[in-house]
Length: 497
Image (cartoon, rainbow, N blue to C red; front, top):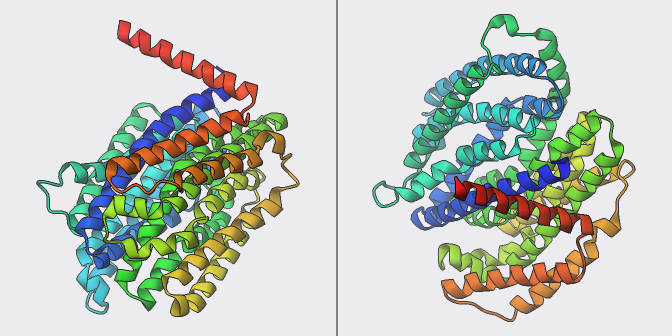
């Protein structure tokens, strides 16, 4: 099976897990927004984004080095690199986690937020420790183009704890502390299992003789310049929530986070393409196959647009229906915020797609500069706009910052990509999307069944429009049909067994 067919297969498996992830996130989102007050939901989001920040910073971007370096490398080389990085990271994490835990006790009397949520903060520090380890495990599987395993690990780390909460809703009190305890239990158990697995497979060793300072230095030289990018990327997506907390309070954070989380589902759904196709882009670069590299980049851009555009248009048209479907009338007052944040998931996923070009060229400093500039702009805009426009100002600042990142990356790589506009077919994607929007705008579903039917109708209309407009090449269609035939044959073989 060629790389193109592997991409189709891995995308299919990854999307099944992504659908499971989105379903879990959706029902958890529904439960938490109904069970938590808006203030508690705001605190929950502050804690979640803080875990995200610390987890990404504490990886020191070494997972990005593994992603880039592993494709096409032999097992012995991978073992030396992974063991060296893993031993180094465990030492760093033990030191920093211990320091933060001690600080949380000593600072509790001086800061009311730490005093009120001290237990939750300490649980979050422990969760962060294991989340960093999971990033390293994920990078190993991505580097070996085992994207379906990566997707499974990501589901367990990010969503299995949510599934447990959903399953135990009738027997377990749903409060912030219990939610964090369940998440900690899941990520800790997964990390320990993967450590044992990789040791048995001779991929990971804690033998200090395997610790190679030269390898670590090379990895850090690549990864450290990416830290401004990682921190700035986080600042772009999280500064707004901290600023809202400072200016307007936790309840407004809850309202804003509701809309942000709803639209972030679009990003999570589309970004699986970056996760699946990214390693193949790095592999094509490593073997110096520029034709294949350009094909994969155009393929990635096409399908990001093909999935992202109709998703945001659908949410825009069915805004009230989707909000009431999730949380009844509790958050109906934030529907007017949706248009201000509508485009950020599309700008974000396209920026990441184009960013692959800068990564393979080792232009990590440029990536850091771009994200730092956008983060500074985002902070300045939040300071100016939130006191005047409230959460709408935060939404405007976030969207502008993501647009700036996308444009700066696009301008940096446009000379390195041969854009095949006849293959991407952006105009056909837009026509099919607006045709879908025109039809579903005629419907105003009220009950659950009618809303689900309208969403399903929109998907069908969009897919039909793409087919009638001949958006897909013959190779794309034939490869997809071949994949279906292989899938059916495997299913028959399992039935026979």
